[in-house]
Amino acid sequence: MAEQKQRQRKNRHKVKDSTQDHLEILDIIDDVLITRNGGAAMILQTNAVNFDLLSEYEQDNKIYAFAGLLNSLNFQIQILVKTQRIDITNYLKYLDKKKQSKMSAGLARLLDIYYEFIQNLIVTNDVLDKNFYIVIPYNPAVTLGKAKMKRSRKAENAEIVNFDKEKLVEKARFFLHPKRDHLMKQLSRMGLDAEVVESEELIQVFYEIYNPSIDE
Image 1 (cartoon, rainbow, N blue to C red):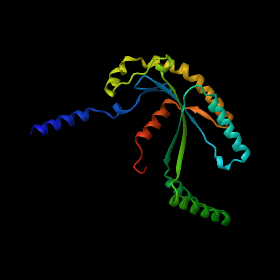
Image 2 (cartoon, one colour):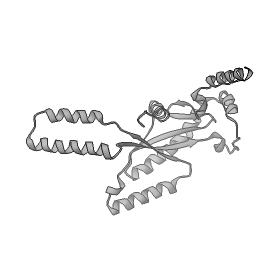
Image 3 (cartoon, rainbow, N blue to C red):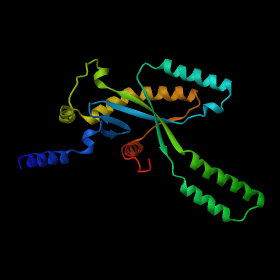
Image 4 (cartoon, helix red, strand yellow):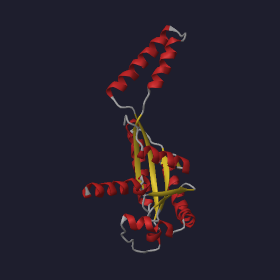
């Protein structure tokens, strides 16, 4: 009986824990991500090129440009690739409707071939969507030359209220904006377009990461 009551107390304690208590993200303000340890980050999203389709000369140029980007960095970055499966059922339904519309025999034949190709593609391969991100971190402790102290999760949560998020964002933007501009300039030399992931988009990105669909 005593053991049962002890288990019930433990279960009640577990219920009080929130998922957010286990995430490193504390908040997102003005396109700046704030972490629980008092750090911050700005995230860029960039497009990609199909390297295999480039000529040898173009491939060499891309490699040299990327090497130039890496050699130009005097700050840390993190490159992330987010991959997820795509459901193209609606696209197949759209093609079905197109097949019912009036068209020439040649065009109808091409549409049948394309429809069959898409069906075979789904059977033999996963249709994937890839998003490419560059994370630019900002750590006030490192910036000020202070040693970072190791703290337990409970200690971190207790100290969250001890720093001003608005002031942190202001300082982070001061340090991150020049780095953002530098990266965007270097990426443009590679023929890539980059833009800052804004607050609402960041929320959506992390929601999809922490709430993957059942099919995935």
